[in-house]
Length: 426
Image 1 (cartoon, one colour):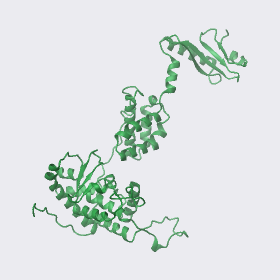
Image 2 (cartoon, helix red, strand yellow; image 1 turned 90 degrees about the vertical axis):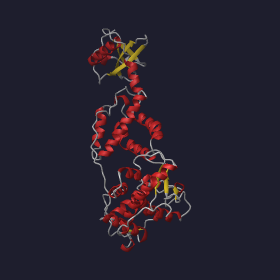
Image 3 (tube, helix red, strand yellow; image 1 turned 90 degrees about the horizontal axis):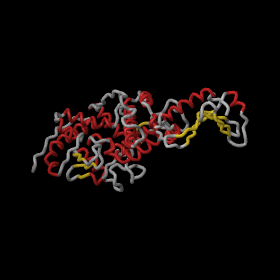
Image 4 (cartoon, one colour; image 1 turned 135 degrees about the horizontal axis):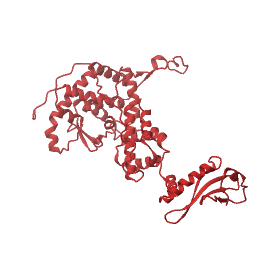
């Protein structure tokens, strides 16, 4: 057998079938020549179980004969140490990639354990940020540097970057539990989260007045269009007096309910009529952030809005979609309407969730203690029976009425009236 040198390898003529020629100095080190003329270096060995294995080192031209010989020596050293390079390579090739992990994470964890809104946001972040950056990586090969790079690239949106990091951390923790990665190897550990500034924006009395006027305008004469600088003279553009968009009472009522109840947006949009009890003056929320039913005490203003809406029959939803009454008003629709409403009201930095902040702020300013504010906004779940509702209801109802009257006065541009509790039996 010849020694596999550059000159010898170049001199071998292709045959009609594959040829394997072994080196005369290093047993198991060989050359494979295909009929096409492609030449590759290989090693052949037996593993601990005595099974013959053949491993390709690389193609001639990309790998020199001397380099292939050195690689072959390292492989034989590993075999003598009890390793099986072929099995390791096959294991790596067959190992799951991050896309596989994300599919399982969503199917077995997100879909079963997370609330609908959280599921929607996780899926969005996975598709938009995590898959494009890490999806083709092997699960076991993702490093802390890989995840840190993804986190840094989202630094313009600190909270979103932290959420992406949290999603990655949970997915890789599950990868350990599912034997996709070694225990204690989560690549998200020790990556510093971005500082997040707590936002507590609320509306002043003047801002409430502008919002109230805008809501009345939206459902009466409509809100003016915002014409772009490039289209002021378009021939298809409506006349100035007709450049207005009417908003349905469903849309303006949604915003009023957010203010009068202090509920979260998802809770208001998903509200059904069978959850509203006018006799007890309460709303029972079936799906909440706490993960269990909660009771909201309705003030007079919230009851008035709901009674107006009840006149429109034909839907189980309190706020049905304007295009299909069988579905609730969508988050996309209300967010789009809010962008226009807040622009006209000159509240460009106010988010819909800030309406809930307004309720909490007014409650605190009314002199209510922390426990009542907590119960009003349901920051912590209280396991209540009907008896406990009766005992705890009055102070929370009074607080809700006080806050509702102040917000209603602001929306109407008038001074708030004093709200006093009625004595039982009066």
